[in-house]
Image 1: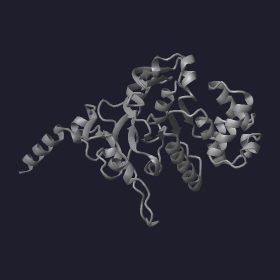
Image 2: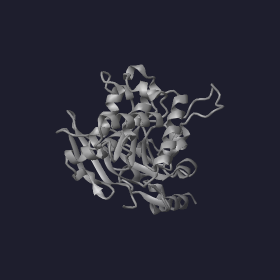
Image 3: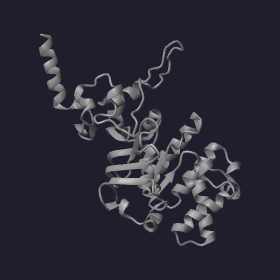
Length: 338
């Protein structure tokens, strides 16, 4: 088995629209190791969900274009797989939890039918065996009285219980990788904590990897081992949770962290906001996409895109401040001041 479970290399995805070509994902690269939880964070529209859906081959049609790159899962490029081959991988080796379970579950079909359908699609089990596995899986995700719940419809479950059903469907075939796309966004904070605790428990129990797509840095701190920070379709910084929270190196990461509301903040204090707006991906900038909103931007930042620069082992940032160019600029500035 390859050391790296998932390896995304220079992925570029675009959409043809009436105004022009939207470059949603622009050269994204990162890895997920066996048994690891990797969080992908960033503002809405930064390309997080598009990346996740591309991994599973869920983006198709004449308006979608995968312009370059590779997605290696256990050493095999998923972008070269046929639709028939991807159907064997989806739900079997790679599971996914979507953001809103009410729109992901079929409202006209009993829960038991939806779970056993996923089982029998990938396993050679009888109806009775599939039903028993569905009961065991519902019990494993913390749904009480699973035998009775199998006969109910999605509207008879609370939001948190529906999300548990989605987790059960994603895990019923024991995948090696679970992609969780904003799994707690529609839930209140108490249920969020329960779902995250459940994912942590299942990950440790089953030894699977998790790719967590979220905009909530609190969720990242609670479950992830490593973090990928994205902005305007590109990777800005990659590091361990401690690196990102305590030693951030990219101005965008620092801005995200400073915008988190703090306990004890007076109601008279103004919350910190990142000034400006993300660039249009119809006409993305030539240089660093964050340069127009960055307090430390230099001339080079708006003209040339910085490559990911290694800060230390496992910690990289795509910022000109990490390059020797910044040191030369600072020396020139201080020299002119003397």
